Length: 236
Image (cartoon, rainbow, N blue to C red; front, side, top):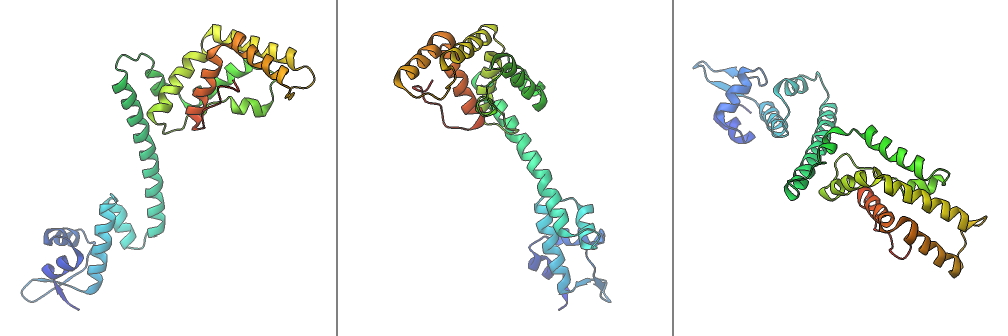
């Protein structure tokens, strides 16, 4: 069916100005009547609807032209754009979290760490702490004590990470964890999985006297950063 420019605009849900613009860019084909008026076929309506959809999804006109000319598959373009948006969303979530923390704590001095530390820096910080304080513990235990900050953390995770950074950098805390490990190894002997009440009571007391509340706080912070359930206070 033959359509006037006004009719094709109504059918596609765009303005007449947009139809002219896309026609001038070569994205739509039309024929001219003897009077010089543009006329469009049904395929123009389909193309206009696709253009409108892709523009609404923020695809640029050169990319849309490539799709319309079958120079790039629509599925490939959509996948590429989706991947790019995922990165942007992750970045925006991170920025939102940092700004929220800053709004809550305008005098916070350590927030610069979140903008300066790379993922490698964060991993190295925790690896160094665990290697120098908990040498010899099993991989499973180390994994449970390793915080891994997501690329798009929420404000609570950012605050927990900043507190963790200060805690693991504290010489006093490092020494208390070393004493805790030494006491645990001496207490456990050949059976670190003993479950008798006397042993358990001594272990809880060891945690209280050697590591103090900071050790449990460390575990709490790890849980927040990793999105885990909070550790039991009884278990220490």
